[in-house]
Image 1 (spheres, helix red, strand yellow):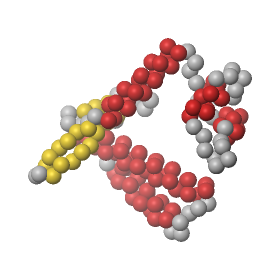
Image 2: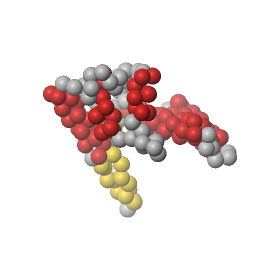
Image 3: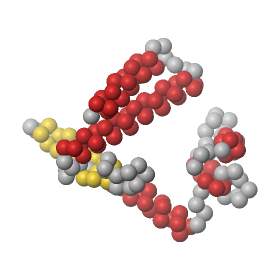
Length: 154
């Protein structure tokens, strides 16, 4: 669901003098049916509770760690990742110890694309704030393009 201009203005109005706000502030403001934020939330407690439990399950799955010792070196990683064979928008995880080479390549592509998205966010934040460290944004952009090329080559 696209965020409307009215919703953005309502959220900005919740900021304190230092520009901070909390998710509790947003939910409280959205409770009123006349709030432009109201429609972004599921107010059916049964459905919302189920959705919250699904989110908790996602978080729990992401926190299960895998420890692998190779030549007496220990590596820690998540045990489950989003299954790259699933369609966009559909849920599904896969154990990293049970995936085949083709799926592993898809997982790596997916992880690298996530890194690219994080780098895009960092670049956009620096530009939006106009607080760029000289040359840093260009260095990040160059590295971002290298990571994107690597992801595309897989």
